[in-house]
Length: 284
Image (cartoon, rainbow, N blue to C red; front, side, top):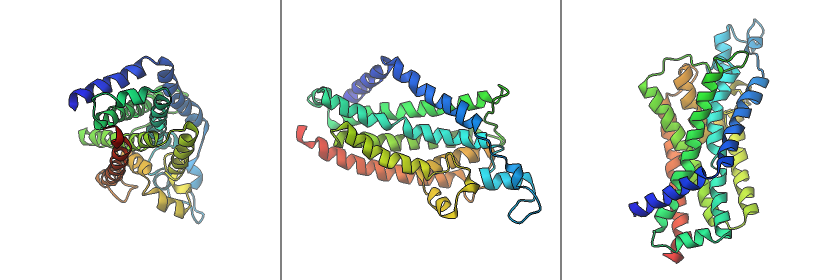
């Protein structure tokens, strides 16, 4: 089992390494988001400070309400981009399975002595690794932009220790693993590319648009805030923002959000394992 898993995982990574165009485009898209959207969209929290009803007594109160304690919209947005890329980078994991089916590659792999668990596990490891690495690329790039005026960058205002770093890494890994499992399962169950992309977009867009990855928290209507606090992307991003900006604007600590994210991951992975086992059963 483990020998087959290692061999198939190596094969998946070799496929990725031999496709530099895919690597380049996967790095280019978050770079454009950070440069164009993050730097082009301005939101002035100072306009919410003043004596009028509904305004805040000082800038920090406005930041806590609008950006959950982040010092600027860009810093708020940069953490949200981590959740954004962790979801979007996994979209093609299932599509690759469908194309392998069309070319007969997936059938040949399933015809080998490797068990279905190794076939699924190897693709899951490769599919989850890419968004994890991409998420850290986004964080590093956003931090670097802070030292490149006139660009905006990610400003860390809290004291980040080893525990905070581990919490941030765990949140990124769980979110990437969750959506890689979900979309990979879709790829195994669906045979038509058009049907696959219609299905994943039905999930992908609502999940992203009901999270607080991109929208300033304080500008959301209350009903959307209630939905957002249970969204797995929001749970991941909340952990990052608490680690980088402090927890004064949050009702719970990072551990609570990690538990919620872990719950989502366990439920979806359990459902996926059951569906994949049934789908691959005839060839075992």
